[in-house]
Length: 145
Image 1 (cartoon, rainbow, N blue to C red):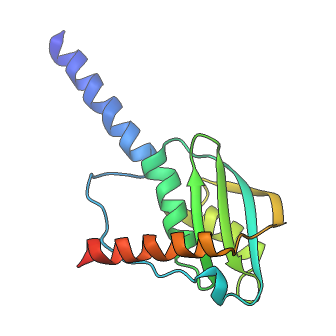
Image 2: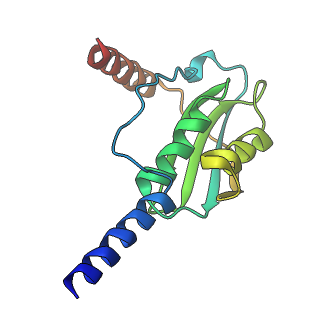
């Protein structure tokens, strides 16, 4: 009886990790370089409702990471609890369709769907935001040294 319960617990744990698209605790050390807002010709912020996420580490994280790799992306954040993604990008290099396609292709495709909730939101470019971004980049660079 104890063996059967243990077997069921192990299978349930494995199913959870596989269902989230995360099969190990290792993380990739791939560095992603995103554009700064002040470098963009046409900065746009897009809010996207993302359906199909089942966990923050295996779903929300990979979506943010993959979309962050798109050329012209300045900010790529996915909030699992809200079921939302927030993307700031250069509209002269990327389109809403590019971002929605990236979301739907993450983790092999066919798992997630994105629906634009808000586009052309105000993009903050004040000095405080720029200083904050520069501080974060500098802090990240020191961490990778």
